[in-house]
Length: 457
Image 1 (cartoon, helix red, strand yellow):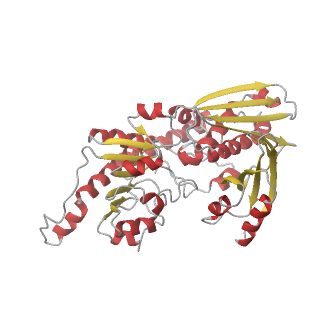
Image 2 (cartoon, helix red, strand yellow):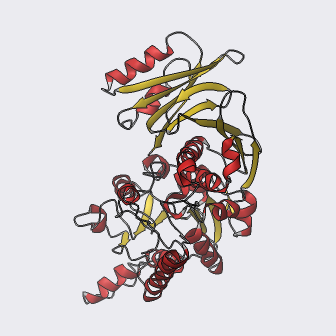
Image 3 (cartoon, one colour):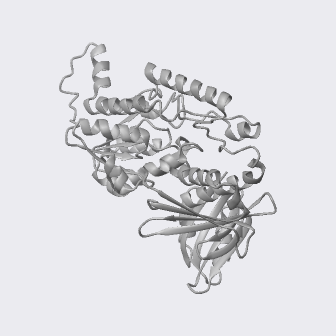
């Protein structure tokens, strides 16, 4: 209710011209309160004690709990719901730390959260609660490798999306004594009938009840009804997830640039493993004459989606960027020496930055034409393997052999090189996503500097 779009076929709706809206703010209180309730329940073993008493037992010594007072709560994701959880946890006198790669330390401090790296959070937290969307970046974010870095006796809470915590690894970590317990409202497969986690005494579970309060359902119903009325009467699509607001007379010209901007933003969002503090967007050519705000919004939506997920849309993207302390700078120029129209985006932190530029070939063919100092021509679509390597003989052959040995088909390959640095990049379009472990296998090949999988839909 409110945020999730798991059961909506967005591409089909968009193709048929159907506007899809959600209400990402309306169930935040309910979801946050459920998180706190689950944390209290597992720490004091309330459901287990209730079940025992219903069985006619009085096992007072069996259900020894732990206090939340002065304990450290680690929040993975500090969006709308995570922020409310942090506020409630501070009321319980907990120390709150958080990991969110899209949040600046200054903004996190205003939310009352000490921003740390994921590894530091895993090592310090007594309780860990996840509040991210389920994306390719966050699927199995908390796995056995993560759990080995945690304190012995840590308690995990997931009221966000099933799949962020690897359930098989969680089961083993609980059985092995590393994780003391878990409170789960969401599961990889729902209904979670037959899930072995539900048989563990150390697990408290509910059937996806995060937004299930009368108040949340009423708020969502009122909000979506008002949004539909506003769209039908005024053409205002608040919280639309599949359309940017563009005047109909310029939409035919801008549509491919909106698509290009979102894909360029998504590409940058997937390669930026640092907290972005500033985004510079440069527009060249005739594009600058048509008003750049819709393109800017599309870029921000693409940039934020890899971590923020479906809570970001064409309406709230600028607001969400501002909430994360990201400054937006735009510039326009009537001409470019190489292209009739070009969009160049630079995502910066204090120490790092990445630049990506794209254009159109003809009227509809989207192309990436530059990544940092590398000139390249690539289609921004599908499954892309980005390889940064030393410009040495045999690198491409080694990658091809590694792919072939795993029966992975390479559809196209594009290359770029920088003679000054002696480095090169390769963009390989694949027919399917890489299997688990393949990125590590490629990274271990000779002369490979870094490798990353990018998914552009």
